[in-house]
Figure 1 (cartoon, rainbow, N blue to C red):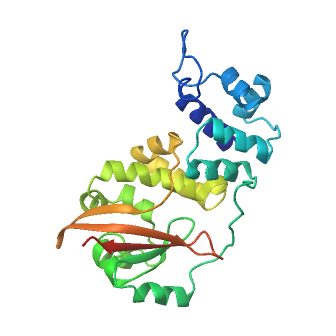
Figure 2: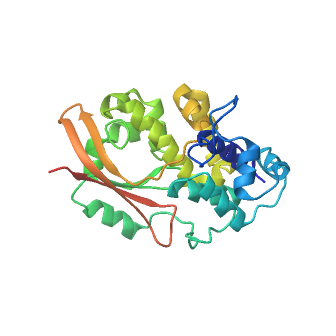
Figure 3: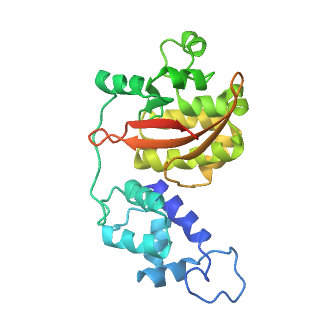
Length: 263
C-alpha cells in the first residue's frame, strides 16, 4: 500500500474529532482527532490492520473497506476521489474516467474562439493552449515576453503561481488562492504524484518554494470546481471572473478553464 495513502488516512483521522464521529471525547488525548482504535472500531476492522495501513505496509484494502473509511472520515467528494485514486481502486459509487492525450488542434481552436480568457492544462498543469484574453490577463505566464524567454518549455501554472513575483501582485488574496491551488493539484494528480514527470515537478517546487513545500505536506485535497477569481491587473486594474473548469470526456487529464466576467 502506498505511503501517500497512509499519510492521507492518518491526516484525515487526526482531523475528525470524536464528537464529529458520534463518540464521547473524554480523557486525555495526544491529538484532537480520532485514535486508531476508535477509527478501527467504527470501520469494523482490527487496530493492527489499520496501524499497518497507516504505516504503508503491503496490506489489502478492498473498495468496500475504502468506502467505509471515506464515510467514517467524512471525506468530501474530492477527498474520496483522491482516496480511491492513490489506493488504485475503483470507487463503487463512480465509474472510472480515464484516457491519456494532449489538446488537439481542434480543441485549441475552440479555446481561441471563446470570448473570455480561456486556457487548457495538461496533467502537469502546463498550459497547452490559450487564447488572447488569457494572454492579456496572465502577464508573466501566458504573455509573449515570458514565452520568448523560455521557448522550449510549456508555461506551467504552478511555476507561475509560486516562483513568479508577478503572480503575487496579479492574484488578489494570493496566500489563500495559492494554498487552495496546491490542494486542488493533489486531488487532480492522485496516485500519479510519484511518477515522472510529476515527481520531478513536485520536488522542484518543494525545493524552490517554502509555501508550496508547507502546503504540499499538509495533505489537503480540494476539488477544482471554479468560483470567484479576483485579479489586480497592472494595466486594467481590479478584475473579477467566475471560473468554470471542464474535463474532457475522453482525455480526462486535460482541463479547459474559462474565466467568465462577473457582470
